[in-house]
Amino acid sequence: MISIDLKKGDTIKVMAGKDRSKTGKVVGVDRKSGLLTVEGVNIRTRFERSKRQNQKGQKVQFPAPFNPSKVMLVCPNCGQITRIGHVIASSGKKLRACKKCKSSF
Picture 1 (cartoon, rainbow, N blue to C red):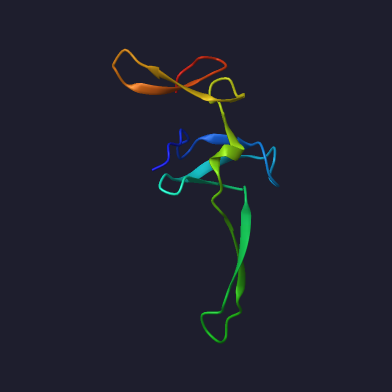
Picture 2 (cartoon, helix red, strand yellow; picture 1 turned 90 degrees about the vertical axis):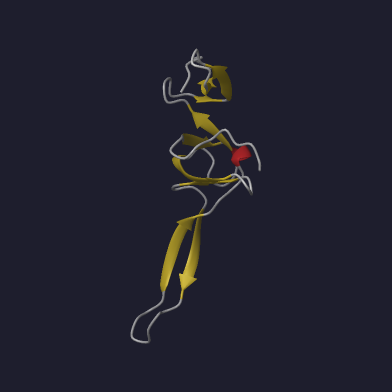
């Protein structure tokens, strides 16, 4: 298990690679392999064969998983790219916090 502070539904910005400066929403996080899937980023193409003889094969595009070290979180409160810190709330629950605006989410 690899520690990833990003969750499904977070908005991120790609900092490195062919999709640099794109933003997108996290579709899935695979904690076992340590990979991240983001909609509209790292799009791959797969060619599927026809299922029947009277149909044509088709080209299917899908977002492929990639390493989360290439992305940074976009803070939902201030809208800036930021690192993720942690704050313990008064209820004893551990929350993620923006390093720039210090607000927790």
